[in-house]
Amino acid sequence: LHQLGGVPPGWMLTPPAGDVARGRNLYRRLGCYTCHAVGDESFPAPTGPGPELTGMGAHHPPGYFAEAVFNPNAVIVDGPG
Image (cartoon, rainbow, N blue to C red; front, top):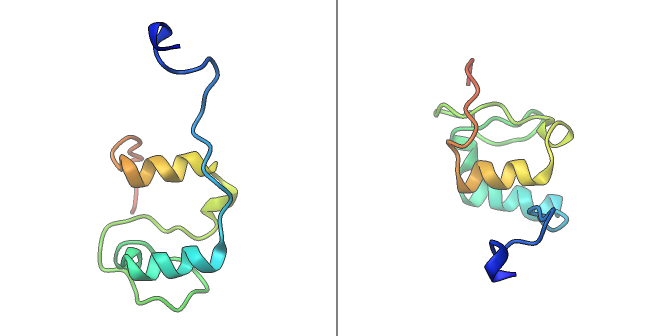
């Protein structure tokens, strides 16, 4: 495997299943709300430039969010936020 590039054919990042309550607590503890709004939540209003995150889980696979955290400049979308 190492001689063939080290990655099995077809391999993809597969994040574990999420836990809503744990994710909400982590979002709060890390201060993600300072840049990202999430509708119907009681977080303070954002003061930074991050995009609105309401409903994004239905639009992107978990690996997209992992990459956004680990490498935030990997995908840049022109537009508000």
